[in-house]
Image (cartoon, rainbow, N blue to C red; front, side, top):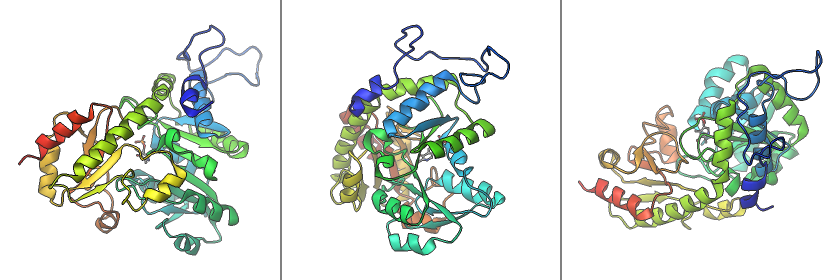
Amino acid sequence: MRLETLLIHGVEGDSATGAVNTPIYQTSTFRQHTVGQQGGYQYSRGNNPTRHALEEQMALLEGGAQGFAFGSGMAALTAVFHLFRAGDHVIASQNLYGGTSRVLDKIFSRFGLSVDYVEFGNLADIKAAIKPNTKALIIETPSNPTLMVTDIRAVTALASQRGLLTVADNTFMSPYLQRPLELGVDIVVHSATKFIGGHSDVLAGVVVAKDAKIAEELHYVQNLTGGVLGPFDSWLLLRGLKTLGVRMDRQSQNACELAAWLRSRPEVKKVYYLGLEDHPGYHLHQTQASGAGNVVSFDVGDGELARHILSGVKLCVLGDSLGGVESLVNLPDVMSHGSVPAERKIQMGVTPSLIRLSVGIEHPADIIADLEQAMQR
Ligand SMILES: *Cc1c(COP(=O)(O)O)cnc(C)c1O
């Protein structure tokens, strides 16, 4: 099955009743037939049929051995970092999601996991950062909010030479546009809050492991630490996933129009979009993903003007998050990247006048009209 079909017919309904959709098994525990029953469902922290259906569906979509669903993207990343132990070292991309570097720096450092941040555009820098205790490379491509692209194949080739794990945060692309496991990555992580859910109504995270051994370790961590996703939220994601393809197509198409329009505006000094040929990551991205996605960032060169636009939008929502059906705008400098050191922000292109737009599925002319009226001084 092609991905569009897999989204609809991958994990399908309920064989016991013929229900077309997976039921919400809103239960914490299951009746056991013998004392110490092995197999089957026993307790929902360990496994729940609704969550299981979502986890299987995500494994199918990413092409992995098994998926695991958590109560947020951060809980999913936290579970992955629990695969390491005191004294281990990981190398992460400099452009990682702020929350990911925060949990490594502020929480996992307490337990003796150390991390170095490196510019993943330069393989020599990654090589130079590898130490005897290095266990993993952590990538996120494209990055937030200026869409810098990491060469997934090159990084995984280096990792396998050196016996390192690779972890990829695939939130910005979703499996519909990019499947890192097929490019050699070992573990994919999602903030399912974004495109997987797609409706800005559920907070969730998913991990998919390529092979059974890592999957077994992740299931162990998931069951022991317990940050699991509830049955109702799992069902919301199963429902959201069915339209992932049509949403992504429409959002990418809209983003393309928005990027072209923004480029024509005198207020806009710079546009970052992976569908624009002059984006530095354009060609590399095309070799590893099948679309540019829906995030368009643009710099208006003047922080006051950026704030003026953001307080003037009526249709676009000013807020954190991305990937929902509604267009959403934010000011990374003080919102999504508020906790990133000033020097790092400038390196990443996050100026006080950079606006990030997550383009929704509205009619593009209405999104354009909204931004146009907001730009009027
Ligand atoms: C939002 C996000 C996260 C964190 O996910 P939550 O669901 O908010 O916990 C991690 N990585 C990326 C790339 C994100 O955009």
